[in-house]
Length: 117
Image (cartoon, rainbow, N blue to C red; front, side, top):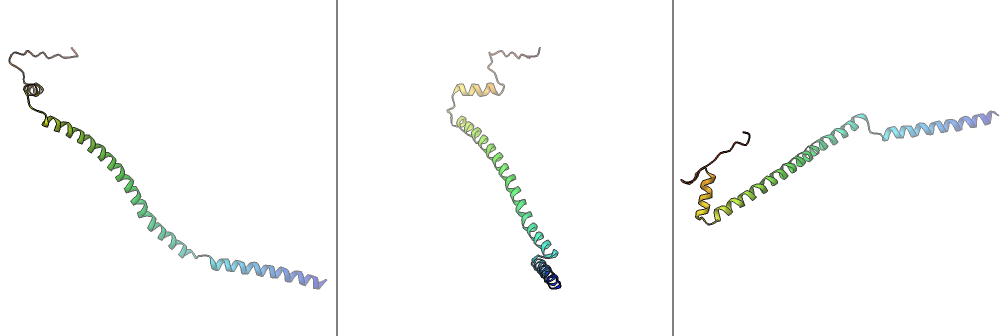
């Protein structure tokens, strides 16, 4: 019976040694605390500027769309003014411009109405 007990002890010791050896190998293969922190710092140093650039690109894209809309509206106004400049000057046009600027003919009577009274 003692042979059987010693065989069982040897098997359990062998299994324990095997587990210890596996644990040692795992500990050897793991990175230490300092290298792990170093890797995370390097990743952060790369990721932060990339994130900032991405947010700046998004902001600039929005500004570009606003400026494009403003440019289009000013181009439409410019085209309308260019048509007025290119239009032939006749008496009716001169009269319309004069009336728009507050001038009146000598035989005209102007009435000003206040809508609230």
